[in-house]
Every structure is written in C-alpha cells, then in structure tokens.
Length: 91
Image (cartoon, rainbow, N blue to C red; front, side):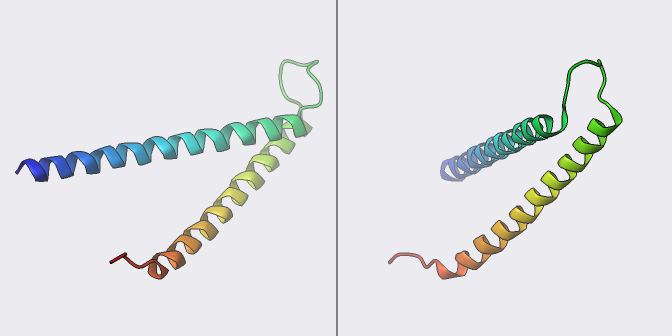
C-alpha cells in the first residue's frame, strides 16, 4: 500500500512539475509576443490610448504569432510521436 501511495505521489509530483513547466512556457511565449508586437506596432506615446492603426497592427501581430505557435506545436507533437516508437527500452 505504501508503494502505491508513493507511486501516486511521484505521479502527482510529475504532474505538478509538468503543469509548472507548461505555465512557464506559456508565460514566456506571452511575454515574447507582447514585446515583439509592442515594438512593431506602437509608434508613439503621445496619446493615452492606441490609435486605430496600432490596434489593427497589434491584432494582426497577435493573430500571426498565436497561429505560428500553434503550427510549431503541431509539428513538435508529430515529431515527438514519430520518435516514440523509434525509442526502445534498454535491456
């Protein structure tokens, strides 16, 4: 019974670690997107609000960035799936 509990705890710890990594990766992607789109689209700081052109630019930039990230994620998933059968257990 203790081994089962220990195994469950390790599994929960692994899940927590994976969730933390996923949050960190998403946060990093969001910050990079924010920086790139802001630098590309915001021209001046004269107004307290974004201009129509800046809003349009940011909307397109964020759309392209998220679309690109989704495509990269799909490719990475396919590559990972293809690598799994190629790996064989040692022994």
